[in-house]
Image (cartoon, rainbow, N blue to C red; front, top):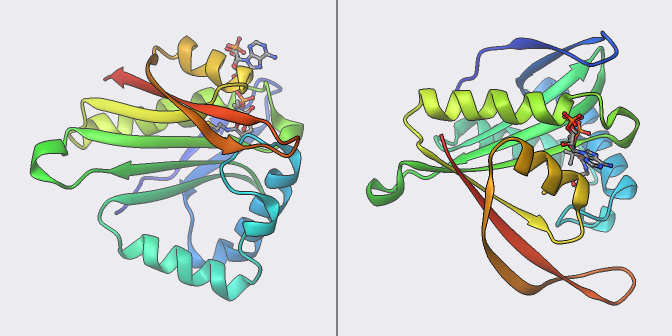
Amino acid sequence: MEYPNTNLFLKDGREVTFAKAAEKDALEVMHFFQNITQETEFLSKSSAETMKSVNEVKYWLMTLDKSKKNLFLIAKEGGNILGMGQLIFSLRHKSKHRATVAVAVRKPYWNLGLGTQILTKMASFARYNGVSQLELTVMENNQNAIKLYQKLGFSQVGKIPNAFLMQNGSYSAELIFVKQI
Ligand SMILES: CC(C)(COP(=O)(O)OP(=O)(O)OC[C@H]1O[C@@H](n2cnc3c(N)ncnc32)[C@H](O)[C@@H]1OP(=O)(O)O)[C@@H](O)C(=O)NCCC(=O)NCCS
């Protein structure tokens, strides 16, 4: 699935490119996941579960590239990935109006408007490709993300209790959010 490259501007004026990740980005993608899983506990993957070799990442990106439903996008400043967005389309006839989105931004770049722009771009692209309902899930304690989703018009429609076992031994529910686009 193809995606047109665009530029985004952070609140501090910096310009980043937003594009589909390619095999040449494999090393930076690996570093991005290794770093971000240590910066936040709010991703479903733990740092121990991230890809450990460039070849593994290359294979993953190659598989995504061939996929007709899966788009992995990166916001990059030079060789540094600041944030990512993932869009998963449903290809089934009865649910092809639906897509799932995910977003993550490296901690040093939080609150610069990047998460908002990544989600907004992905929503426009999904809509352009026939999607009318965007869906996502979030851990119940992830207040920054929940505020962001509510700001962008997502509404909570469900909750899966005890979905994640956190480092401190407590369980966190997974909240399901939906937005008609
Ligand atoms: C959630 C996340 C993607 C937000 O990215 P971001 O680039 O910081 O988001 P933005 O700067 O575009 O938007 C921040 C918005 O979130 C909300 N927000 C963020 N931090 C907040 C805080 N401390 N208190 C209240 N609202 C907050 C606000 O609505 C704010 O919008 P505003 O600046 O217009 O007021 C980022 O914090 C992140 O990647 N966290 C770790 C991974 C993660 O949790 N991903 C989501 C998994 S479901």
